[in-house]
Image (cartoon, rainbow, N blue to C red):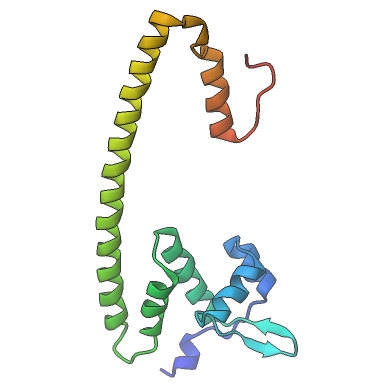
Length: 159
């Protein structure tokens, strides 16, 4: 079966891809400048193929898990090899496992930092209780701070 029968010939505008993937035209142009995307041109307009769309999806997935654009580029460069995607899969697997190790290490560091901060908060609260309880934050202050963190909106009258 010829390749062109298996591949859709649909094209996409920059706007369509931006809407679908919730990214900006500037981001797509940046990926093009870095050689990660290679849209065709129709006059001044960029015309993205199914291949560009697939590459964009991989770029965004790679970024989401913390891969650098250089690492993403290394993986994408293996796409066109005539090996059924084996080299690309092997490279991806190696990069993903490296990223897992790095993220697990970061998680351990974050957990340690959180524990140290909790101990520090407890010590400071105990000292303030003994010396200046009037300076302790009130429960409403914590509630306000948490609400802001959770929904990004300041709740009026929460105090």
